[in-house]
Structures are given as C-alpha cells and as structure tokens.
Length: 301
View 1 (cartoon, rainbow, N blue to C red):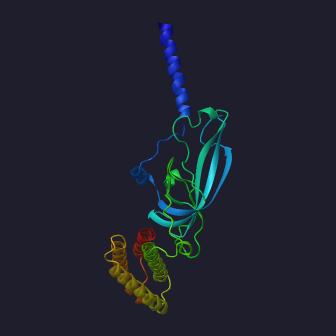
View 2 (cartoon, one colour):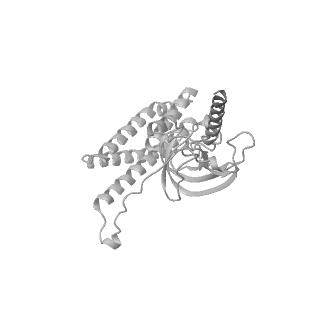
C-alpha cells in the first residue's frame, strides 16, 4: 500500500513538472474588456511589411534550447484609441513572436496558444493593444510631437491576442465594370475624407499655435492661420448641418465641430497673454501640452 502511495505521489510530481513546461507562455486569449484595460496604447494601422527571423528563445532560464520566431511588423498609424505616445501618421514597428520548437519541441503548443496569434499580413488593417511600458522595455522612438518626421517607434502587443485584424469590407463596385458607382458608398467616402482632413488641419494649426506660444510669437502668421482655421470650422459646421439626418456622420461631425470650437476658446487666454509679451509659466506650458495630447487622442483616432 505504501509503495502504491509513493508511486502515485511520484507520478503526480512528474505530471506537474511536465505541465509547468508545457504551459510555459501558454495564455488564454484576453477578452475585449481585458485588452482595453491592460493595453498601454491602442491604435489601428495598416501593415506595410512583415519580416521574420529565428533564434534561441530568451523566455526560459537554464539550458532549455527552444527556438522562437520573431516578427517585425511595420505599420503606419491610421487612428489612435488609447494615447500615450503614438500619433496618427507615425510609423511603428510591432515586435511579435511565436515558438518554433527545439530539443523539447514536443511540449511546445501542447496546451493553448503561445506567442502572438494571429500574425497579420502586408496590406491588412490591424488594431494593436500594446503592452505597457514596464512590460515593454523595447518600446522606443519619438513621441511625434516635435517638429519634423516622427522616428519609428517599437512596440510589443499583449500576449496572445494583442493584434486584432479587421475583417475586409465588401468591395465597392468598379465604375469601369459596372457602369456606375454606389452613391451611398461614394458619399460616405467623401464625408469620411472631409472629416479626416478637417481633423488633421486642426491638429496642425494647434501644433503651430503651441510652438509660437512657447517660443516666439508671430502675429502675422497667427492671423493667416486663424483665417484658415475659421474657414475650416465653418466648413465643418456646414457639413454637420447638411448631414444632420445621417445617424452616423451627423452626430460625429457635430461633436467634432463643437469640440474644436471649445479648444479654440480655451486657447484665447494663452494667446491674449502672449500678445502682451508675457512668458508662459511652466504650469501653462504643461496645460498646453496636455491639451494637445487630448486633441490628438480624440481627433487622431
């Protein structure tokens, strides 16, 4: 009887040991709520290229010779849903991995997914939920707020399903083939392009205002861009009114118009002080920087 008990305990210990190796890196998919909560940043981008390389895994201690495949996925940021450093238009390198195998390769993948699943392909539109900075020491690059072209940032998605590939939309009719395009789709594309252009114009003007408020004020330049900004705001308001019955674009255009107007109003105190020759305090600079971050997060999505 004692021998039987001893054998059972030994077998249990063996199973636990095997399970601990088998489950190394094996994680259940995160729910949409968990992805949003755990992500440091959330952005959607278009895949520009995907390259991969294989090498010894760095995920294990000791002499376990596993091989991992590392993927470098170059993406252009189309929109930002959760903001820390990335901005629309920035290029990002997404670093992902999957196990390949090794001397103990039979255990790899035995229980659940390991590494990142799925890996997107060139041309696909992907929403990325990145690991937070403390879990992502390789994240680097310019924040995109300084003048000039932003540097390429490197981010790591949450494991295992921190990259969500968007389903392809129904292909629009080809005018040369069908003889006519769908008016609904054409109108939707026009409004979407206008909305994006209006947001980008506003963010560019805000960046210029911030630069002049912090450094040297140029009244002539300010008046020129204030004129263009007024035209942009008027066009946005008119588009909002003309699409008031559109359940999708009507509320969105109205919200953007009202939000941009509120930002312009909040800038007036800064502008008035600068026109009088005042120098912004560190707190005012911080407030202005925070305002720009909020605008980028909302309009750059």
